[in-house]
Amino acid sequence: MKADSRWMQENGEMFHAPIDPRTKEYLNTMNQWHSEGLFEKKLLSRQEKDWQTLIFNKCLREI
Image (cartoon, rainbow, N blue to C red):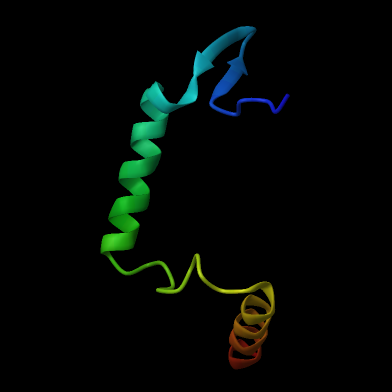
């Protein structure tokens, strides 16, 4: 049986992560950063090889 990652434990207490106030704060922050254009547009659709190339080229520009 697969573990349900929506349930978390903190200080010996179980809580349902999707309704935790910190989850809402996290999602609001991610939405704000996305709206400000801080994420690369193809963030979730790139293959690992593409990420490696992107990071390598960015590092070379900064040298």
